[in-house]
Amino acid sequence: MKRASFGRRIATAAATLGMLGAAVIGGAGSASAGSNGQQIRFHDGKGTVTSLYIVGYNHDGQSVGHCFSTPNVDNYFSGWWWKGNINVYIHTDNESCSGSPYGLLSYYSVPAYQADSDWYTIDSLRW
Image (cartoon, rainbow, N blue to C red; front, side, top):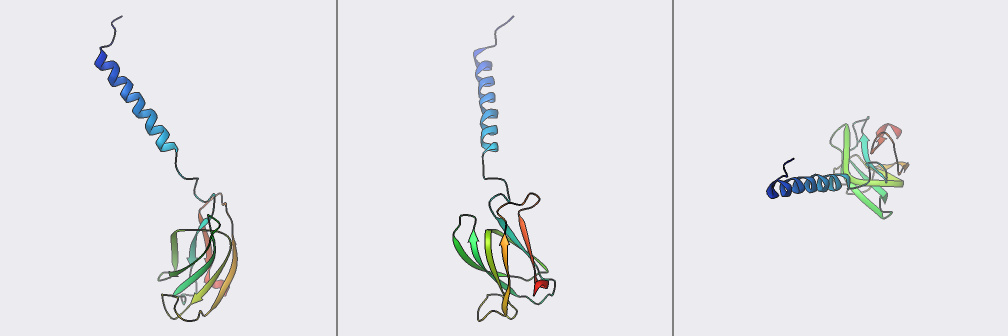
């Protein structure tokens, strides 16, 4: 049996290391979506809400609040992860949450984990 050339052995070793490196890098990363908080999907079934101010806890347990414009019937607030208790205040007269809110839409308890999605839906039909 003929022995592979030095260059061929180096190329094979490099390819093997490259595949192992890709497997390690590809396998590493953040926890699976929806396993430490949820992103919010707001469904404006009434079509009257112009913005929401959400106050609660993020995936790191920090108390946060943020204003979200709601130009559509279905609004997805990606990049903001919530878990635990949140309050959702509605505005019907502007998209920047300025001024007094129309009212408290509701109090929600956002689960840290959902098996089927990383989106937690709240609906304007609750008020």
